[in-house]
Length: 272
Image (cartoon, rainbow, N blue to C red; front, side, top):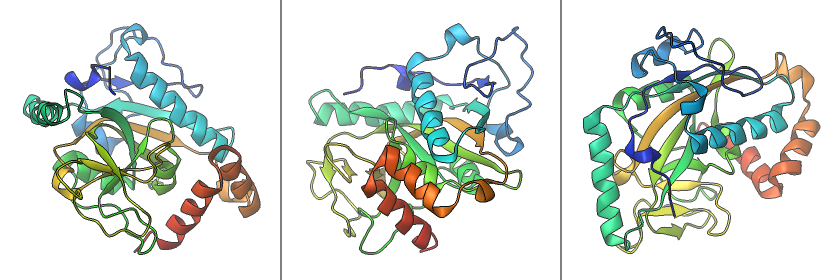
C-alpha cells in the first residue's frame, strides 16, 4: 500500500549531489544545474530545492539505488545529477484520474509505488518527450510477459543492468511513480500481453519479492509517471578493474543467483 503523497505533486526541481550522495546546500540561486545532462534540459525546471525540502521517501529510494550501484561497480561511482522532471498539470491530472479509477476498483488502494526504468539516453529522452512507445526487451522462454519492465525501489538491480552509457560515460535511469493496482504473478516464458482478467492491473515476476513490475502496453502511459532522471558515472576503465569472476561474485553477494542468471540472459539477449 502506498501511504505517500508525492504522486499528488508536480516535481519541478533540479538537485546537485556530491559524490557521497548528500544534497548540497542551496543559496536560492535559480540557475540550472551544470550537471543536468543537456539532452534532459528541456524536461526540467531550472530551480534548486533546499535540502530540508527534499522529499525524504524519494531521497531514500535514490540512496538505495546508489548503494546497490556502488556494491556492483565499486567505490568511485559518482552521482552526476538528480534532475526532477517538470510534469505538466494536464499530464499529472491524467495520471491521477487513472489512480482514482483503480482505487475505485480495488477497494480504495491503487497500490502506487516507486519504480526504476533503465535504458539508453536516447530511450529515456524519447520517454520524456513522447511517453513510453514500446515494451521492454522480450527474451523468449525467459521474460515474464510483454510489457514495460520497472524495478522496485528496494531492488533496482535489474534496471541498473539495462542502463547503457552515453558518449560521456554517464548512465541514466528514470525514477517513476507506478499504479500497480492488483498484481498477478507472470511466470517466466509467458508471452502474456494484457491482464489475464479484469481482476488484475499489472504483473510481477515474484509475488513475495518482485524484481520486476510488468506494466502492460495498454497502461504504459497512464499508469507510469516519470518524476526524476538520475545520472551517475561508474569508475573509469571499469572493464579493466572488474573481471568476469569478480562481477559474478558481486552480483551473487547482494542479489543472489536468480538475479545473476537474469543478468547473464539479459546481456546475452538484450538486442532481441
